[in-house]
Figure 1 (cartoon, rainbow, N blue to C red):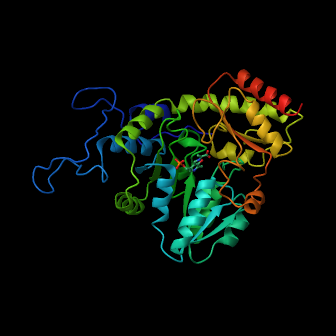
Figure 2: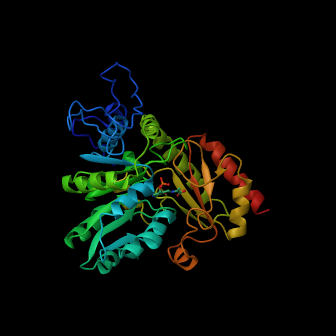
Figure 3: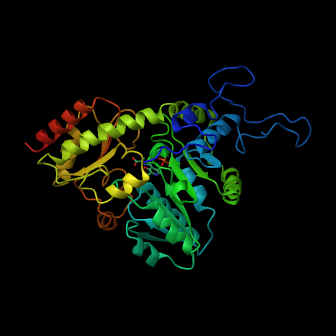
Amino acid sequence: MTDKKSRNGWGFATRALHVGQGPDPATGAVVQPIHLATTFAQQGVGKHQGFEYSRSGNPTRSALEENLAALEEAKHCLAFASGLGAESTMMLLLKPDDHVVYMEDVYGGTFRLFDKVMKRFGITFTAVDATDLEAVEDAITPSTRLVWLESPTNPLLRVVDIDAVSEVAHSHGAMVCVDNTFATPYLQQPLHLGADAVMHSATKYIGGHSDVVGGAIMTSDDELEQRLRFHQNAIGAVPSPFDCWLLLRGIKTLALRVERQSENAMAVATTLESNRAVQRVHYPGLESHAGRAVAQRQMRLFGGMVSFEVKDEATALRVLEKLEIFALAESLGAVESLAEHPARMTHASIPEAERKRSGVGDGLIRLSIGVEDAADLVADLEHALAVANA
Ligand code: P1T
């Protein structure tokens, strides 16, 4: 668990606060201005200061992109209106008959994009257990252009060895994109583990306050950046200047939040594991977790997401209703703790048989751990489990 330095030697927290976030050269304001202008005056046709029209580029968005690139230690970043806006732009780099291999346990909306939208354009998909290198290798065909990973996964917190999968993918000429939403750039930097691109739902930890939807792709590959930049403008799934500003504001405390969330998550996971009403706990920091060693190697801490299984759906729904501090809500990564039922909520778009095959059962509850006092979160869960099982 190393603290990688940026190109200019700054640590993560310093980059988060100072890259793209410096005082405004025009006024000295220490906080980035929000540039709402949709268009920019030109001194002569084509003679401008880098901005023409805000879909193609906007100064507040450029500040965010510069900052996010520094967080992943990437050469480039492109910001989008949502995580799915980022994903769909990446998918539209593909063409009919191209093939994608993806980790079977992914966010339900990612599955829906692949299954219900991209397949219509003639792109084919194969789900694999990417914790099994042989399964990845077997799934790759001569048409495979992309291997799509999540790690830790949503909602089962499975951990993929990004380095090893990247090596397999590259040996077959496929590129690797990692959805790094759950880990955050503070805990894991997939580009240093061999991935070609990183994608984020910035709605989650990067924003961190449940008040902005956003997405991003980072890469150090100049050609990939050029293609993405063209498609970012051509497709137009760009964030508003205010959304970019909210993300920049959230990023200032990303490291602090994720440290506290990881600490709280460990306390919650440990307590749940000793509760008799809980059948299984999924948290990469637990000794019982199959991916713990890989997580320890490729992540700084184990993160703020925990999921656990109770005996059936009825019990899971009762637990969720009895929680007082955890809000029953989709989404994750914010300062306040959230709880949800993947089968009926975030992963409802996955057909039941497929969902169960990937291990997302009816008794599964997913927790996004916030920055509250750990003792209160533990007490809330223990109380809800006791009442639900009374
Ligand atoms: O919601 P949006 O910003 O479009 O991001 C989609 C997305 C992509 N990848 C991962 C790993 C995600 O978790 C998400 C969104 N997830 C939820 C809303 C959720 O509750 O799981």
